[in-house]
Image 1 (cartoon, rainbow, N blue to C red):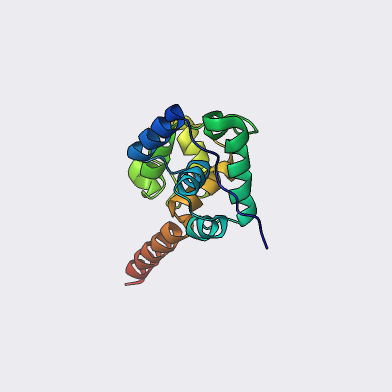
Image 2 (cartoon, rainbow, N blue to C red):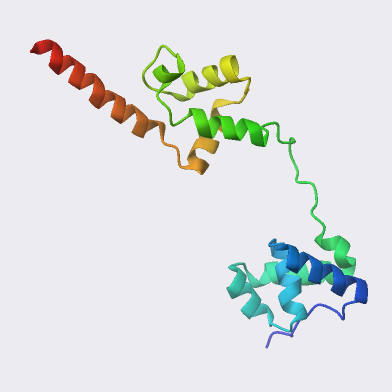
Length: 163
């Protein structure tokens, strides 16, 4: 049988901090694990509720029991710091779904390369093709859908010329 595991008894300061974070709507996994464990939810129930493994829940409880609130502070992530700003993301969200010709571009269909070139030259957003592709995917923007619409429009033009 698995040994029951809970967060240790909270100090007054820890209780106040956790209550403040709860009121502020903090929603990261470590905080939620500690919050639920402090309310005496067992590890399997916490894991199911949060959609994480029991090992993850135990890890957060052990971390909090050893480090206290400091163990829950948002830490720096490994890797290169983010270079795309929220303003850059807003520009990408605005430009990518639009017809390139409406923005004065010479092509009727965005590709990753043409969109990337346009963003750099006209909007000052410098981004790799792979990161641009990731952002477009995350935002649900499909350049292929834009291309399909433009192809249909081009066919109408050719049909009009035959008449």
